[in-house]
Length: 84
Image (cartoon, rainbow, N blue to C red; front, side, top):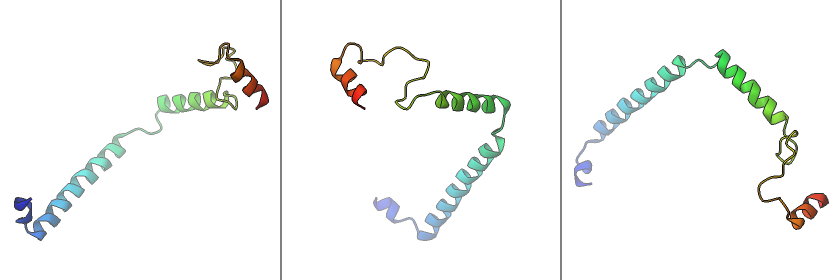
Protein backbone atom coordinates (compact mmCIF):
# COMPACT_ATOMS: atom_id res chain seq x y z
CA UNK A 1 0.00 0.00 0.00
CA UNK A 2 2.91 2.33 0.68
CA UNK A 3 4.17 1.77 -2.87
CA UNK A 4 0.75 2.49 -4.38
CA UNK A 5 0.59 5.70 -2.41
CA UNK A 6 3.72 6.94 -4.21
CA UNK A 7 2.11 6.68 -7.68
CA UNK A 8 1.11 10.19 -8.86
CA UNK A 9 -2.58 10.89 -9.52
CA UNK A 10 -1.98 11.66 -13.21
CA UNK A 11 -0.50 8.20 -13.65
CA UNK A 12 -3.63 6.63 -12.14
CA UNK A 13 -5.70 8.53 -14.71
CA UNK A 14 -3.41 7.22 -17.47
CA UNK A 15 -3.71 3.64 -16.20
CA UNK A 16 -7.50 4.00 -16.06
CA UNK A 17 -7.64 5.31 -19.63
CA UNK A 18 -5.42 2.52 -20.95
CA UNK A 19 -7.47 -0.18 -19.21
CA UNK A 20 -10.75 1.39 -20.34
CA UNK A 21 -9.64 1.59 -23.96
CA UNK A 22 -8.28 -1.96 -23.87
CA UNK A 23 -11.45 -3.55 -22.53
CA UNK A 24 -13.69 -1.26 -24.59
CA UNK A 25 -11.88 -2.18 -27.82
CA UNK A 26 -11.95 -5.84 -26.85
CA UNK A 27 -15.70 -5.75 -26.23
CA UNK A 28 -16.30 -3.89 -29.49
CA UNK A 29 -14.20 -6.40 -31.41
CA UNK A 30 -16.10 -9.36 -29.99
CA UNK A 31 -19.51 -7.78 -30.51
CA UNK A 32 -18.72 -6.97 -34.14
CA UNK A 33 -17.25 -10.42 -34.73
CA UNK A 34 -20.26 -12.26 -33.31
CA UNK A 35 -22.97 -13.34 -35.69
CA UNK A 36 -26.13 -12.64 -33.78
CA UNK A 37 -28.55 -13.69 -36.51
CA UNK A 38 -26.86 -16.85 -37.72
CA UNK A 39 -29.32 -19.49 -38.93
CA UNK A 40 -28.20 -21.92 -36.21
CA UNK A 41 -28.88 -19.41 -33.43
CA UNK A 42 -32.27 -18.48 -34.88
CA UNK A 43 -33.26 -22.14 -35.15
CA UNK A 44 -32.13 -22.81 -31.56
CA UNK A 45 -34.08 -19.76 -30.36
CA UNK A 46 -37.25 -20.92 -32.13
CA UNK A 47 -36.89 -24.39 -30.60
CA UNK A 48 -36.45 -22.88 -27.13
CA UNK A 49 -39.53 -20.70 -27.54
CA UNK A 50 -41.58 -23.68 -28.69
CA UNK A 51 -40.37 -25.74 -25.71
CA UNK A 52 -41.31 -22.94 -23.31
CA UNK A 53 -44.76 -22.55 -24.87
CA UNK A 54 -45.37 -26.30 -24.55
CA UNK A 55 -44.94 -26.17 -20.77
CA UNK A 56 -47.96 -26.21 -18.55
CA UNK A 57 -48.48 -23.65 -15.82
CA UNK A 58 -46.70 -25.80 -13.21
CA UNK A 59 -43.58 -26.12 -15.39
CA UNK A 60 -44.06 -29.72 -16.50
CA UNK A 61 -44.10 -30.44 -20.21
CA UNK A 62 -47.66 -30.88 -21.46
CA UNK A 63 -46.87 -34.25 -23.04
CA UNK A 64 -44.98 -35.49 -19.97
CA UNK A 65 -47.17 -37.99 -18.14
CA UNK A 66 -44.56 -39.03 -15.58
CA UNK A 67 -44.59 -37.53 -12.13
CA UNK A 68 -41.88 -35.18 -11.02
CA UNK A 69 -39.09 -36.52 -8.83
CA UNK A 70 -40.34 -36.95 -5.29
CA UNK A 71 -44.06 -36.89 -6.16
CA UNK A 72 -44.37 -40.67 -6.57
CA UNK A 73 -46.62 -42.05 -3.85
CA UNK A 74 -46.78 -39.02 -1.59
CA UNK A 75 -50.45 -38.55 -0.74
CA UNK A 76 -49.86 -35.13 0.84
CA UNK A 77 -48.39 -33.73 -2.38
CA UNK A 78 -51.22 -35.21 -4.45
CA UNK A 79 -53.79 -33.68 -2.09
CA UNK A 80 -52.02 -30.32 -2.16
CA UNK A 81 -51.89 -30.35 -5.99
CA UNK A 82 -55.56 -31.23 -6.26
CA UNK A 83 -56.45 -28.36 -3.89
CA UNK A 84 -54.40 -25.87 -5.90
